[in-house]
Length: 298
Image (tube, rainbow, N blue to C red):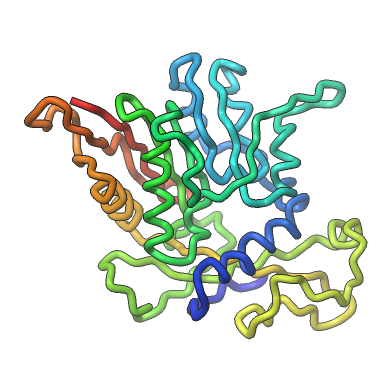
C-alpha cells in the first residue's frame, strides 16, 4: 500500500485540480468505478426519505452509483448527475443497468463550481466525496454555495460528504499531520496526495506500456507516480483536502452567510420573508464527515 503524502499547493488551485484530480480520474475511471458500488447508508436513507416526484442534482456524481436510488422506490425521484470526467459520465449514464436491460440516466458534463442552473431549480442536491478535491478554502466554500443556490429556497435539501482526517480502523489510509499549513482558518484539514495504484489487468487493458508515465505525474510532488521498473504499474496521485473536525460545518455556515441566509431553524426568524438554512444533522461516518441541510423561508 502506497503511503499518503502531505502536499503544499504552490500553483493556481485550478491548475492543481486539472493535473491531480481531473486528469487522474479520466485515466482511472473504469478501475475506480469497479471499486465504488455500495451506497453509504446515511445517503441512501436521505434519498429514500425524499417525497415522490422530487428532482435533484448529484454534483460530482462519479460513476453515478446514487442515481438509481432509492432502491425501495425506484423511479420515485429523479437525480441528475454532473461531473467533470467524461469517462466517468459514460459509466454513470447507465448506472444500475443489468444484463439485457440497459437504463439511461440523465447526466451532464460540467464543473461543480459552475452556475449553469437556474437558482432554486432543484428540490435537493447531494455532493458525495467531491468537495475535498477542491484545492483552496474559497473554492470549497463556493462549491457549498452552489449547492445552496441550486435548491428551492422553500424546502430545498442538501447532503454533503467529505473525507476526514480521522480515519477508522478499516481504512487503509494514514493521514500525515503537519504543524501548520499557513491557513488563516481555525479549523483546517490536511492537503495530501492519496495514491491510486492501477491493477495490472486494468493497466494492460488500457493498452499502455508498463514504462508509461501517467499524465498526472509532471511535478516533483507527483514523482512517486513514475514506475521504478518495467514490472510496476502506474501510481496516480489524487489530491484531497482531508477535513478536520468541525471544518465542514464551518464551511457550510460561511457559504450560507455569504449567500445571505440565516443559520438555524425557521422558528428563530423574527420577521416574515426571512431566508435561512437549518443544519438537520452532521457527523462522522466511516472516515467521512457529513452535513445535511434544509433551506426555508419564513
